[in-house]
Amino acid sequence: MYIQSGGLVTIFNHKKGKFDYFRSMQFIVFITVATVSIFLVFLFSKLLNDTYNEKAIDQKVESVESQCGWLANQVVGVNFLIDDSSNSISTQTNELAASLNGRIIIIKSNYKIIKDTTTDFQDKFFISESLSQVMNGEKKHMVTTRGENMEIMIPIKSSNKKDSRILGAVIATVSLKDMNQVARNLTVRRNMLLVAFMICSISFALVLSYMMTKDFGKIKKDLDFIAAGHEDEQIRNVAFTEVNDLVTLFNEILAKSQILESSRQEFVSNVSHELKTPMTSMKVLADSLLQQGDQVPAELYREFMGDMVKEIDRENIIISDLLSLVKLDKKAAKLEITNININELLEVILKRLKPIAEQRNIELILESFRPVSADIDEVKLTLALSNLIENGIKYNQDNGWVRVSLNADHKFLYIKVADSGVGIPEDCQDQVFERFYRVDKARSRDTGGTGLGLAITKNCVLLHNGEIKIYSKLGEGTTFTVRIPLKYQVQGGSNDK
Image 1 (tube, one colour):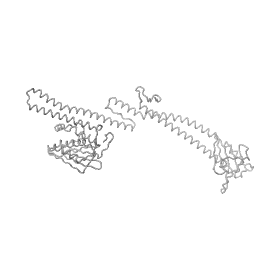
Image 2 (tube, rainbow, N blue to C red):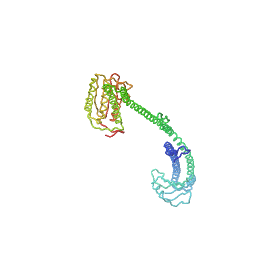
Image 3 (cartoon, rainbow, N blue to C red):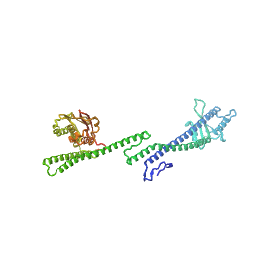
Image 4 (cartoon, one colour):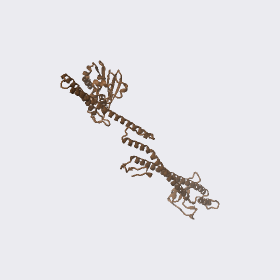
């Protein structure tokens, strides 16, 4: 169990016995922001402190080298006669050592000490690897730090520009106690500021984690409310634009889900009504026969029984269409994909529907612009195209026409079914593919339609990853256009070949 101070965040919910993911997210945001903030503050303070120390040492070395260089020029000028009474180089050397709070040693090129401000090592010899590198010109200077002291070696060169010989060396040992004390004081102050910044960082992390996750808390609350059975509600808008965009998308999904639920309820109601109507008609006919008694003419029996057979046939048609619609559900349908000649397929469909068209003297016209073959489920696409052409015949005028055209490009096939029929009002065109929807209910019942044909057609086209569109004007006919890929490809959620 993780607990943020003050009980603000509790990742494990004891009452429900499960993890509270919203609180865990808030905790993760807090830990991340706090850790990053503290790390950045610590890194910045350390970088600042190290930069100061390096700068202070560089300035110290530069200052000592400058003063030792001046001293080296003075020594060359008196030809290393430092203790000569005619000059004050020895006194100046002592004063320089005192000002540096350190020690100065002057050495000739033979490694003999001619001046040591601290000891009486004059006329003795001093040899070291560092001094040899300076004397030999391998190093322009040598800086060595030992504890709280720093040793700086610089060469003494000839004053003659044409003569670049190294005549000796100046070794200055200076104390770093004062500089180190300043650095320690700065470190103490840095640490105090670091603690203050850490407190500010933690406070900032608390506020930021709350601000970043409070919108998710509102969303979770609304989702819990919706999950409790209030499906008609929506998630409230929140402050952050990015999160608000997600809320908008989710509300759109909820709205579509509500529309789907309304459509489902309406579908159930329509199915009940459509199935109940033939049953009611048959019951009325049967009751009428029973009320006639035993003296009913045979002709009346035959008439009533014929009407009952028609109602049973109508019931069978509705049930068959419903079963077809269920089988064509995109999640459940299985396609038997084969490469089919679409030109021949349309010829077969028109040949089969020609007797129906001839009853009203409607001309069926097929226009093929090129040979077309495509990967399709022959049974399902035949059902879809038959529904479109049969609708063009049923909802047409006597002596009219239905024109079917076929074309293709390198990727899609295009089928257009146009008729000279009654047309569809513009406000009804978006609904014609809905189940049981009829533009003219009375006319549809007269023609034997169930209101499922176009819904079945659309499902068949969608199963083939295609699309269908409608263009119609009242009194001027209707045109359906179908576009289907020539090569069938399995998409997410679709079934394999």
